[in-house]
Length: 85
Image 1 (cartoon, rainbow, N blue to C red):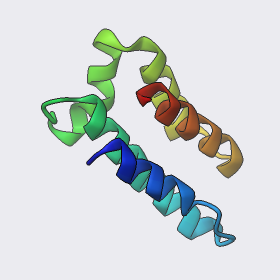
Image 2: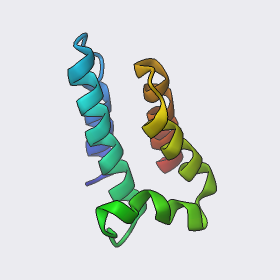
Image 3: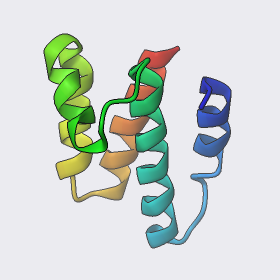
């Protein structure tokens, strides 16, 4: 998936339904991981692979996955997308 598609999905995050927003954020997160990895490793290794060479993104990914606040999850996701640009 391209960065343009990720940005398009990011714009759809302005919805009110929190459940729908969280689902969309997770989909975007998966797309960001695919964009970062030129060869897509197995899904269970995607975040772990970040630790090897992209420490900042690894930290953001960990924060995104463990954060309970939807707003803070969005902030982490936005930072990951900004990093791709």
